[in-house]
Image 1 (spheres, helix red, strand yellow):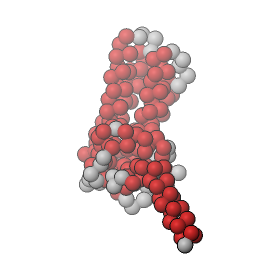
Image 2 (tube, helix red, strand yellow; image 1 turned 60 degrees about the vertical axis):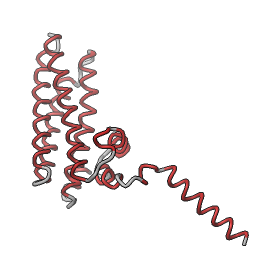
Image 3 (cartoon, helix red, strand yellow; image 1 turned 180 degrees about the horizontal axis):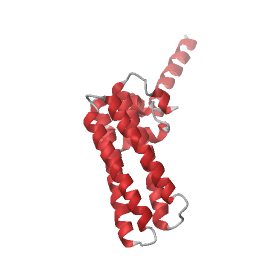
Image 4 (tube, helix red, strand yellow; image 1 turned 90 degrees about the vertical axis):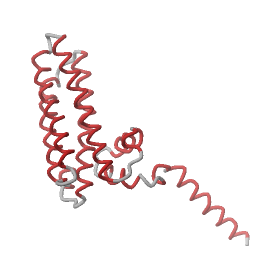
Length: 187
């Protein structure tokens, strides 16, 4: 009798701890977030990003969540393009490099918008559009990677964030496709 009571208490404690330690997993929305974050290189960043941004925090389905993830990346690309353009106009020491970086970020935003349009009908094509952006990120890194001025340092930080968001966007497109043929690109 005492053994049964101890086991029941132990089981109840284990279940409570499971819910307390992983409250997000208890959410019915988490299955959509997991579908994307399981494909991300930085899963902790993915879960944190998708559970704390209002457009992605409570998805109603995988496709709307994936669209919101790509929109989040697009927004960051557009904000960075604006920052780069304004800085290029104000600071002649970085004008040439930042003008090229501006073009790169405009191309990333265009690729992401294209991906979002194609996401439902052709997730593989959407995934390709997102991945095409990594060439532009390499270009930005080449242009400002060795610079130590404040504007370049800020741009490098924004580019790291962009690369993480592109990874999430690629994961989102891949999750909608759900045939895992793109999984080899993530390794």
